[in-house]
Image (tube, rainbow, N blue to C red):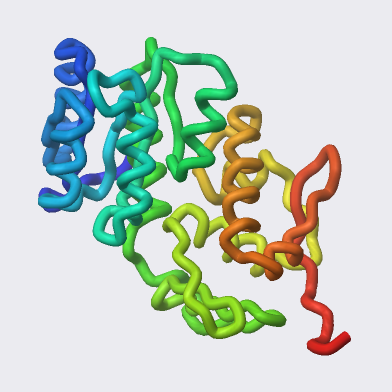
Length: 238
């Protein structure tokens, strides 16, 4: 179970008071500092002012939708690295895919188990925490330069903005380069999730990662029916 220091803030965004009360109770019980917002505009104001570690974000909000909020969070340099757990009554895959493609770290459908929500929150915060990775140093593979201590990525010298989850996914693939990584294994390693759920989450994050890396995204190969593999870069000029 994730132990929350008092400074670890979570923002719960939902227009249903019962849901807000339920989520707040279970998170506050573990020591999280919980704030609440009932609409998208208030959520963005809270995020920009208080910079919470994580936002539990309902998609069906009055005015600005959760999708709109997520898009603005990721577009704003001051909030783009805040972790987001989508909370939605929509079970349709296109809605989940849209949220993940906009940069959500995970999603949970209503009705949900409070115990599962707490576990998801803890897992997200563990992987997005500002801790220095083991064996910190700089990895250089072809056009890619990955600074593990600073958690930064450059392609041909240009800084690439990645979310903490995208960074961990890239680092995992690089450190296991040449070996095929199944979606279930990546879920366990990057998302701390059971290996038999949410494999689409991996696919959407890989897709976003490839887009951000540009031509260097080709270093991430799809192994059809199984998962992904990071290959060694060909020599420059070949």
